[in-house]
Amino acid sequence: MKLKLLEGFYICCSCHKVFDQTYEIYTYLEENKRPFCSVKCLENYYSPLIKKLEEEEGLTRKAMNHNDTLGPILLRDPLFLKHALSQSSEIHQIDNGLGDLITIIFSWFDWSNFGKVGTVVYSIRENDKDVLILHAIVDQKENFLESFLPEAENKNSSESVYIDQEMVASIELKKSTFMAALLEQRTAMDIPYEEFAYYEPYIGPTLERADEVFVEKDQEGDQVFKFFKACNKEGKNFYFVVFGVIVSADETTENETVIPILSFPTIDADLYRYFRTGEQLSGFSRN
Ligand SMILES: [Zn+2]
Image 1: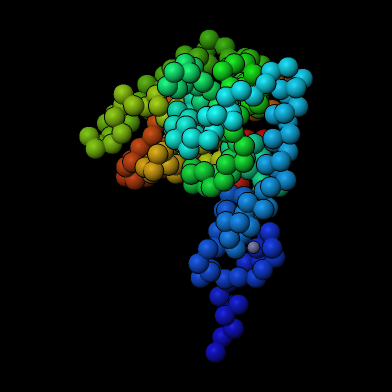
Image 2: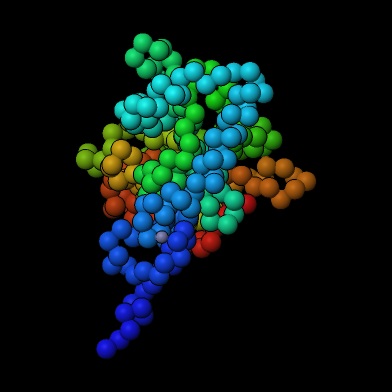
C-alpha cells in the first residue's frame, strides 16, 4: 500500500498542521500560494494585516481630524458591503512580490437616505471572489477615500508616455482592424457590445495578471501583444481580452508600458481561441 502522503500534502500556513487534498475544509489560495486547513486558520494568518489596516485608517483620520461616523453604522449591515462590492468603480491589486496579493476595491454610490457614500475594501481574492475581507473604509468624502488607493497605474505612465501623431493614427488603424475581426467572429449569444463599458475595470488586472500572453506581428510589422484572463463578475465566468502595443514610457529608463488598442469580455471559448495566435510568452511581466 502506498503512503497516503505521497498523493499530495499541504502544511497549513497558520497552525502548521499537515493535511491532504481530501481534507474537507481545506482552503488553498492559488494566487497567494498559501494552503490553510480551515477558514479560522485563514483569518488568523491575516489578522496582523487586518489590525495594521485598521490602525492605518485610524491614524489617517486622526491626522486629518476626520472621524469615522458612518463605518460603525453601515458596516453592521451585510447588505451594505455586498452592494458596495457590486458597485466597484476601481479595482486595484497590490503585490509585495512574495506572493501576497491584496485586491482594493473602490466604490462610490447612493445609499438609502445617506446620499453619496463610498467604500474602499481591502480583500484577499481568489478567482475574482472575495475569500476574506481584510478591511473596509466607509466615508462620504471622495478625496479622503482616494488617499487609501494606490497611485493609478496608468495615470503616471500615460502622462510620461509620449505618443506622436503617427502612433495615434497607427493605434486607430489597428483598433479598427481588430474591431472588424471581433464583430465578424462574435456570436449573438456573447456579452452584448453595449455592456462592454462595465467590464473596463478588468483591463488593469488582465494586463498585470494575464493567464496567457501572445505576441504577433500585424500587417504594419508592429508587435501586438494579446492578454487573456479568465474572470468572474457577480458569479458569471467570462474571459477578458486586451490587445495592446508596448511603448517605452521614458527614453532614459527601460520602463515600458502597454497602450491598449482594444479590450473586450467574452463568454465564447471559440472567440478566445480565434485570437489566441502568435507566439506565446511565458513568465511575461510588465516590469
Ligand atoms: Zn490550520
